[in-house]
Amino acid sequence: MRKLVLAVIALLLLSCVVSQAAPTQTIAVPTAIPPTQTTAVQSATPPGQPPALPTATPPAAKPTATNNAGITFSVGPDEALTYPSELITLPDEHTTFMPPAAGSDSYLVFAATFRQTGSPVVLETKDLRSFGLAPGYAQPVMSPPLRFTVCKPSYDPEFDLNYAAPGSVLQDPTRPAGNLMMMIYEAENHCPGAVWQVQFYVTVGFARSADYGKTWPAAVDSELGGADRYPVLKGSVPEPATPEQPPVALGDALPSAFVDGTALYVVYTVSAPGGDGLIRVARATLGGSGAVSLLKWNNGTFSGAGIGGPDSAVLPARGCMGYQLTGSISYSDALGVYLMTFVCVSSKKDSNGTPQPNQGAWYFSTATRLDQQNWSAPRMIENSQFPVTTGCGLSGSGRSFDGWYPSFMSPGAPSGHLGAAGSVFFMNGCDLGKRVFVGRTFTIRGAEGDLRPSSTDITDGKP
Image (tube, rainbow, N blue to C red):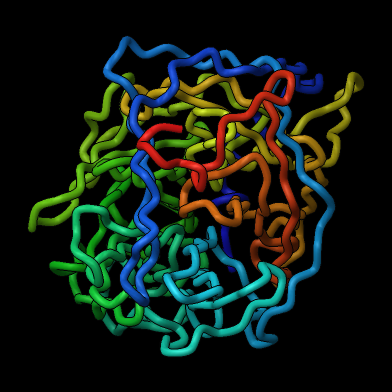
């Protein structure tokens, strides 16, 4: 799609470019306290429903940052995927893999694409290499009220007016069977003052489905949505009500989400002039009948209001000499820690001051306490670094990279959990133009190859 968030953040950070390469970081074996409880995988699951989600609840102890010397996290080469030819802009956000339901051998895949407008589509796959449209699901399964390039005659502040596509689709463990789906999605309004512009005001939206993601609530013509489809993260800069001069991208963008017990964590980035280009996290407690209310991490605690409140970065370092984006959280059953993965794009000059080609790569960080966000210093995932080129879109804008929106999964593990190996799915191509949906394999190893059991081996509530 048109992820001008990338271009905006890049321009903001060019002034901070340094003349030497990023220093090599050494990370490794988690000496952190392992989780004290992991819910067992349920073998008796109602037909048509996914297996229950194991969760990793950290102990109530003083938070200790992980010290990760010795971990090896690497990926293999690109592997071609087959999928419907009409999905020419797949993927456009993160991609979610739901494990096969009881009696099925097919993964259900929620993805973002961009036909006439940005919307979610639902795919299925048996082998994680060949994808088809999932039967029984409308395509797209949810839509914004207006096409991407259309505005109303008068200004309308509706938060998902022109784009509504998922970063994550999750099960809600506090809801009964059949009422278990929630979508965390990017929501965009491209019509300040009723004038369409490529740049956008972006928020993070929340929607619920009561039938395993087959139907979702219709859009509500309101800045704050309706009862089951509404924004949960909104930037501190107000949405402009008049045409911008010059147009800029504003707001909270590029979300993904993770459920741990009854806590929902949402990873996102901020687009705004003067932004720092660092990843953020917000948290909510699930359960109850009211709207989900997120709090942003702000200078050491989850205390910033989700709608318009302040926030701050969660990682202790950038990783690369540039900006972070498209982050996601999972739980590593192999290492016994939480894992954050993200893209980092660097811009730098050589010793003579000559600008060098931008480089993008995947990075990872680990934590033992999501409530304390005690992340380790990020380290690059091996074999993931490739050039970032500019001017790939039709208008001469856009950035191309072999690695946008990396989404990791391990076969046999529940959503959000990773074993010692698996696959990562992502976009190879232009954020504002042509791209392809591709995959790679990954492996994670700790010191001396000593890995914790996969989540599929959990039998007594503990790994």
